Image 1 (cartoon, helix red, strand yellow):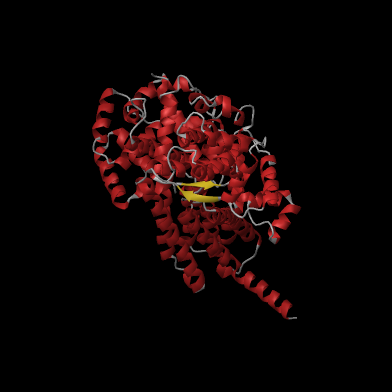
Image 2: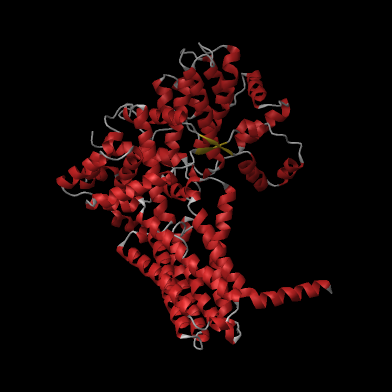
Length: 639
């Protein structure tokens, strides 16, 4: 009986307050999308992504449901005018926020569905206006009609942004370059007054079209890029990152890294925000209309002489919606005016005073830092996974489900770690050195690891670890062998100097560990790894070995694998070759260079569309390396 009474109370509350609950919820979801929508460009947090995904879906579904509910439900005569007025806000909320128009690349592909939704929901809102506002006062009717126009334009703007995000041809519209020698001279004078952060952002705009072409399947070959007029226009601003083509000092390596990060941040804008639309003259016109229209609606509502017939709660909700809409539109306008896209446009048009004023405000508010990634990369070590405690109930459940086992391996045994500036310096220096000093004798299309092993005359002894093997298998073999080497080389004194004796060795060891675990992370997240989903045979083999030896730690297990040096397993054979060091080489440097070559191979051969999809999930270090390689190759075509 109490359950029935409780259910009846819920029904009564929903019938009386359902529309109010829906309209307030819809507005709160828009606030969530505004505040948190841009965080994912620099965050890998699964909790944040899940929260955003739910908010993104709920924002649309709540608005669509509410408009249908309004069109079908009858309301008391004294509430009718406000119901129609609120219907226009649902249409406005369907337009979404500038910070997030698409949650994934697939959302851009279904822009036609959103176009159909626009037509259907606009019809529903129009019907609600026709049904409820006829008896309303002229001020409320006028406010409702103006708000309907604003909502229709905002939702249409979102559909347009989704369509542009799905069409690679529209990126050509973003080309803005100084076309004459005088314009280029003026550009260089202005650049001299910029700080490092501003300079990198502007250079990213000049290189952005090249970045877009490399990652979204635009059919433009590298050779064609190197011999176009566009190359001559971008050469002066960006050649400092790669000229001369030789190993560059630390600051230039970091400039290249930050340049590529800025380009990827701009590419994120193109796919996941309204940047392609709001920075056109049509988009600016929509913003002017929506802001002025919303302010006009607020004034009309203030003048409404029929407000005495509505409850104070409904009036308060209406004011919250109006003030909220004005605030959101104002924030949107300030974001557009102060964006790097606007600065770039003013810069290229020669409007230097306006540009200087915007730059000063950006510098004061430190806006440029919002484009920085979190500088974290995934880590997974196969030996850590194999030596886990398998006596727990969760592990017993895993054995009953292969899918559950793989899912837990990704979630439980994958972590993210911050990468240091020194790590990035070491990796980028090696990438640039390999791609420049040796590019005439080595191709990134070669088998991974082949060049380094051949250069150090180790191919005959260690080539078996990469020859005729799929890429994921090579990674697992080298990861296990690297762990064995790092655990055992000091114990057996096969290295000419102790690993802990020199600062350079410490840095190399840390870099090797991070790279090795990062490539292992890519193996269990194969969307970015060339070669498809890897086999679990190596992992299963290692698990069986661990069960037989019952070692409690990663280090103990690694050492125990050397007990049977005659074992034909490739990772044990490779570890023995590394520890043997027949050529008396700096084996740490060899191992590091092999891992960097693996990294370059994976970056160059992975699917471009997977890199674009990863931008919406916090970005990926592999994507940065991919674009560094592409930039180097572009300038190599002119040497």
